[in-house]
Length: 202
Length: 65
Image (cartoon, rainbow over all chains, first blue to last red; front, side, top):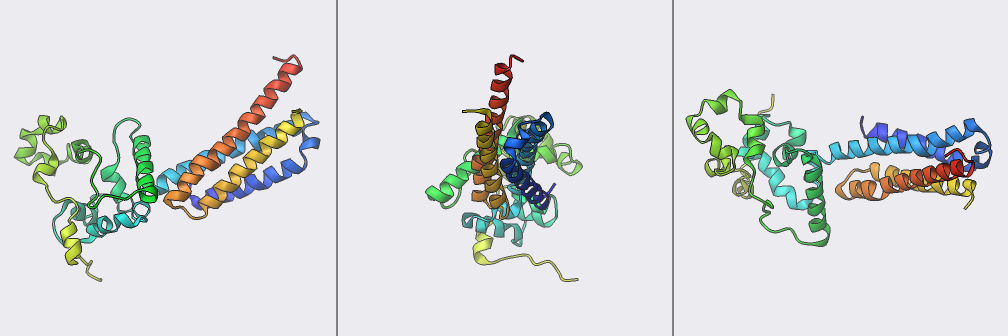
């Protein structure tokens, strides 16, 4: 389901609602008419609204959506820096879906994590429109290892590193952060210096 | 409020909600998504609830409940 589908469904629903509004009196006089009203008020609008919300949730998880706020510009640029920062490597080597690069690493992977992530996004909006984002932007809490381990904990490359196996229990309990060793996440210094990787044109 | 008037109110609420959803979904942005979810969807839900309330009231009045 995509945005075009939602818009088409909304236009159809609006057309139906207008027709129902004009002919409500006649429709309410018969059982069949009442069923049409039930579909026009009770079923279709709710279904379309649910579909629209689902599309909105997907759209609001996209990299372009996150980067549409100016505060995020340097963090978006850090996806393209030349170097071995975590963000650049994950994005440039396609270790994450580029269209959802921010969301994959910053979402909450716990139960109802998507809802919690969206609610936290609401807070970002409040700050964007009614406050002032701190410079540099900081996470609300320390970065959870679960977000790294969600993908890495059973990967061969990860398990073959002795330190990962040795500290597995501590890392699972967040007593030792992945970022203790992998320090460079968003390389903002490289962004300010304009050190960007360019794909070789084929 | 008679049944017909209540159904019209329900339709108007749904229509308003759908229009808000249409306008906001034409250009997805952080603020349009918030308006979609916090204004458009509740209006549609309110319309549906008014309709259900009307149907239940009419059924009770007719002795079917």
